[in-house]
Length: 166
Figure 1 (tube, rainbow, N blue to C red):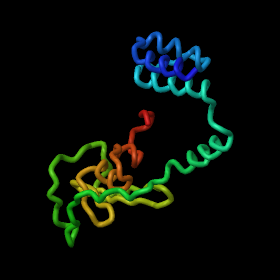
Figure 2 (figure 1 turned 180 degrees about the horizontal axis):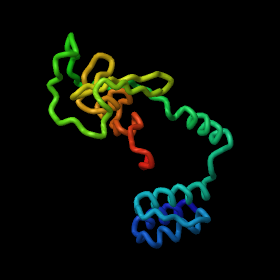
Figure 3 (figure 1 turned 90 degrees about the horizontal axis):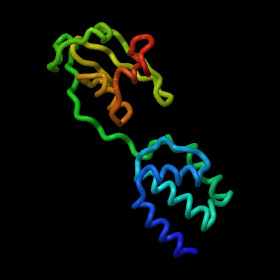
Figure 4 (figure 1 turned 180 degrees about the vertical axis):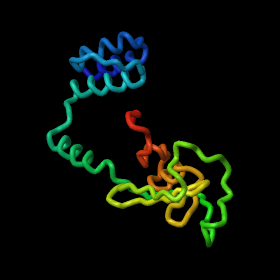
């Protein structure tokens, strides 16, 4: 039986996407809209192996569910981003390029957001944003400093107009 499984797994890579989708529907009991051949091959191979060799034990399923509950925890801190220090007096203009966008709040506005149990506050400058004593050129740069990964500053601070996609 293992020889047949090995041959069947080897043959999967040679099938066109249409046949892989039909095979997926037969194995999983539902159609898929996925057209990614590599993903289909991996999922079908997993299912075939699970049927032949046995699926996960109940204990393994419980452990996987426990791990999935903690999946959103960050294991390592974000790398510090290169930043421009805040001048001693905020009267000196920041030397950041770019023009002021009309969709940003007026200078002096304090943007506040709750993120992972911490209140984040960012002050809008004429050209830039101050977060924890550092001037950033864009809201996306501030959001990256906070989250450790790239994201839209407007989405992070929820500054989209009413009715816009979120």
